[in-house]
Amino acid sequence: MVQELLDKIGSLTIVQAAELVKAMEDKFGISAAAPVAVAAAPAAGAAAPAGEEKTEFNVVLEGFSGDKKVDAIKKVREITNLPLMDAKKLVEGGTGVLKEGVSKDEAEKIKKEIEALGGKIALK
Image (cartoon, rainbow, N blue to C red; front, side, top):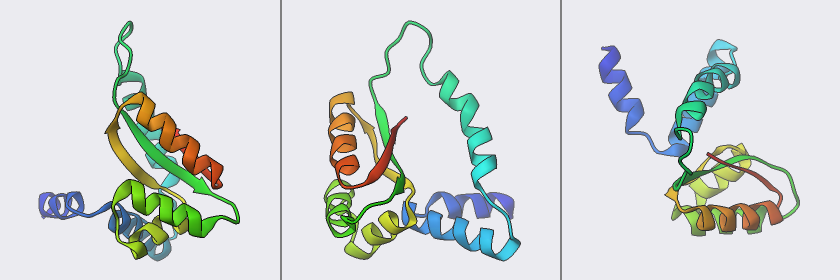
């Protein structure tokens, strides 16, 4: 049963996964922020062995605050190829992966574009 749940969760889109987390937080009165941060810390340190430069990056939206929400939704939609409503939920939710496995130049370009519109971006 647990494996079935994991398989189903693994097949969710980013927006669906964010909705699931929000629903679980609301239902159980918990916050997923602390466990995720703790779990991600070892992975970040082990991501690139010493002496090797990282060549692929994930562009992660970590928040949005600004008056250019419509422009941000358009840009997120352009970057992710998500439907309009999913892009809107991603921007309004303020968190989610925008692009995975991109070059450093492309990641920096996306970061610059989204931050100009009021988004906070992390490259992982």
